[in-house]
Structure formats: structure tokens, C-alpha cells
Image (tube, rainbow, N blue to C red):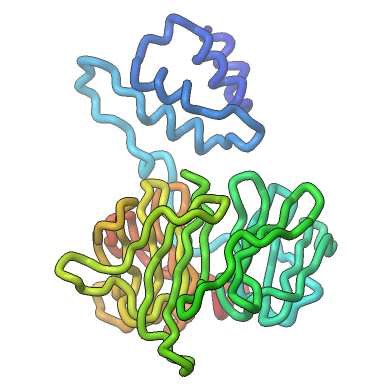
Length: 317
């Protein structure tokens, strides 16, 4: 077994299969996790590390190694590659469909490109100027059209189907497709009669086929969670993370219970959050329209640092 592991260190799928097949590996917690793994080409080295970190040796007094000790966070972004995108005037939002395909949108268009910057497909009915699309776990694309309907683009043949039609006065503002549950998280805003004034907001969880599961709108005692929400994502622990112009970064758990809000670093500088995502260590990254920098906070809302991008030519992330 030792020789097999040595040969498979750079091949994570085969590495895990070795552990799954060997009866010598008796750690119950790890074995249960291995059985839950769906082995595919999408398993990354990070997945392997995450599983190995969950091993708890009975009776061991050694301190467990945490993710923080395996990865070093850098306060300066590293430029990997530049992708010139034709067909759009400026990039508002991006979704990664696969290891070789991206979707980028502006006010008028949504373009599908490969990493050679070739346009593979293009749509013109997308809702403008915000997080109006998201990739699913299997590489399809979900997006909001100009009539605020939710549509799906199938990766197999680029056909489009309608998942959900808008029910006024609530409109989907942005969305996220869960990689944990494959549910669809919609950030909804309510229009005030015939005026373009959105006075209420909520998060709606739906199945991948458009059936309603959950609504998240209030804290305890009826206090509203969201005021002017902008973007939404999900953390690896199931937390739902929303950027809000008035309330900062608002985080609830999977059940909708309020966890915390982040309104800026300890210095107290004003935060005007827009695009938001999480990384492999469950940190939250949010772009700040006020300072044009990216705030990095941990999964519990503690400020870590501002991620510098201007040296790489990204002035307005």
C-alpha cells in the first residue's frame, strides 16, 4: 500500500480509490467520507487534502494540521493569464463552466468563450449589469433574461429552456447555483408598485428544476436581513453569503439563521460591496466599489486583509 500511495501522489482519483479498496485503512470517519466521494475527473488536489485533514487518529495527542498551515494566503493577487473577450464592451460578471470554457456578460450580451478566447456561443437576452448568470455543477448555465425569467443553457447542445417565469412584483436580481446541493439560490427584490424602487428583498432556494424549497428574509423578531442586496454566493460550509449596499456582507447558515454581517475592516472605512465569492479555505472575498479593492474575510466574518489587484492592471475589480 505504501508503494502504491507513493506512485499515485499526483493522481488524486486513483489515490483515493486505493484507500477505498484497502481493508487495512480502518479510520471510520475517513472511510465514510471516501464512500461519499463521486469519483470523476473534476476531483482536485484540494479535495484530497480536505479529506486527509479530516482523519482523526484515536488516542493521538498531536495537534491536527489545519488548512491554514498547508496554504499561505497572499495579500497580492498573482496574474495567471489575460483573456481578451470579444463581443462585449466590459465585463460585469463571469462564470466558469468547465476547465476550458467561460461565460462573460455585459449590459447586452452573454458570450461563451474557451481559453483560446474563441467565441463558442452568444446570447443577447440576458438581464443587464449584474450577477445574472451562474454555472451548475455539471457545466450548464443558469441565467436571468430581460423579462426576469430564469433560463438554463444546456452544455450538450446549447439549447435553452425556461425554468421559472417571473411572478410580479418579486423579481430575481441575481443568482447562484449551489455546488453542494445543486439547488438554485435566487436573490429576489420586490418592486414598489409601478415605481422602480425596490423596497424589500429575500433569498429563495429552489430545486434545479424550479420548485420552491425555502425563503430567507428576516432575522429573529422580524428584522429584515437585506435592504439593497447586490450579489449572492454560497460557502463550502453551506452558509449563504450576500453583498448588500446598506448592510455590507450578510451571512446566514443553510437553514436561514442569521450568523453575522461584515461592514468593513477595523479602521471603519465605508464598505460598498458588489461582486462576492468564496475560496477553497472558506474565506469570503468581496469587491468594494468605494475603494475598488477586494476585502478578504474568514468564514466567521473576521477581517484578514485587502487583496491588491491594481499592480496587475485590475483597477476596478
